[in-house]
Each structure stands twice: as structure tokens, then as C-alpha cells.
Image (cartoon, rainbow, N blue to C red):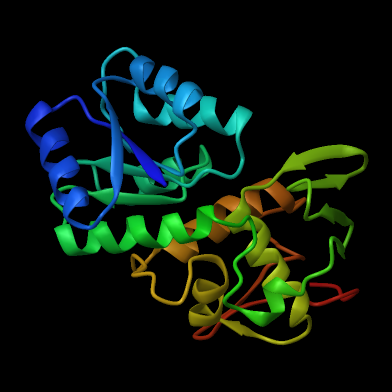
Length: 237
């Protein structure tokens, strides 16, 4: 398995390659977004690590382009801009993770390894409820096809990222009960993943905008304050 690193700073790019080589991870590199797109189509990497601010094609637009073609390959974004709105935008365009610079080498390696484990299968296998989830689900007025990574409402398709699907499957498996934040992290990110403090909330907020008729009054993903989230089958909000 190899990963694609797209970073316009040659020193940082070389440093990342050396760091990951020590972990036994092979890398292919690109110096800008357009080059990264070419390498992605040619090499089919198991994971992508992109800087947000790159010439010719920035990391966000590159992420959009890849997600239009590939819903499965994990994408991690690196950026010196660590504001919450930047993280939300990164998640909304299809990134699986957003890491602010400067970052810890140990944390980055842990996130990459977690992403590589996820890339071996669309559905996480560590949580029993997720591994045994049915291929088709119904949540409210939303029809979900797990194998297609797609949902439908009123015959309109809604594409889902693997992690979004894992969150919905976890909630569906425990319908009517509160699912803790830790349980959702385990289901969608993996048990040994090191989450950002707001990553789950930002991801859920982005997912609500995709699947809820009224994200301000959600009927599918409800907040359970102090605990996590809940899906109530056939109940009014």
C-alpha cells in the first residue's frame, strides 16, 4: 500500500516521505494539485495527504475532483489555517480528516495508519454493529444503499462518504438509543484513531446538511446533549 503526498513545500514534502519511510509506508509525491491529480489517476494510492494551499489546483478543489470519481480512498488535508470554518469546509468537500499545521509527527503517523486501515475495506470491521449492517437501510424518509454509498429521498440521489455511512449505520443499529461520541468514533474512525476534539460534531453538521430536510430541526440525527447522537425510528422530533 502506498500513499500520495501533495505538498508544494519541497522541504516539508521530503520530510514527510522520510518520516513515513521509517514507518514502512511507501509514498508517491506531487508538487501541486494538477500533478497530484495525474498521479492519483495513474497510481491509485491507498490514501491521499494533501496540503490545502497549493498552486494550480488547491487541496479543496482536488478533494472535490477525487470525490466525484472515488468515494472510498481516504483523504487527509494539511493546512496552516486551523479555524473551525476551514475544517468544516474540508469535511464538506469530502475529506476524511483535517490536520492543522504545525502538527505532531506522532499524531500524523497515527492518523495516516488509521486511514490506511480504513482503506482496506469500505465498512469498518472493528465494531460488530457496523460489520453486520444490512445492505439497505431506511431512516425516516431516507433510503440508504450501503453498497452503493448512496441515499435517496424523493428519487433524488445523495452521495455518501464511507465515514458518513458508518455513522448512519451505527445510529440505525441502535435506533431509539443514545450512541456515545466514543462509540461513533470507534465505528467511523477506528478504535485507535486520535480524533480532533470537534471532528465528530463538524462531520455530523456536514452530514445533516446533506440528509436532513431541515438541518436546524433534524429528524434523523438528533443530538443527545452530554452523550452523543440518536436516531428515533418513526418518531416526530
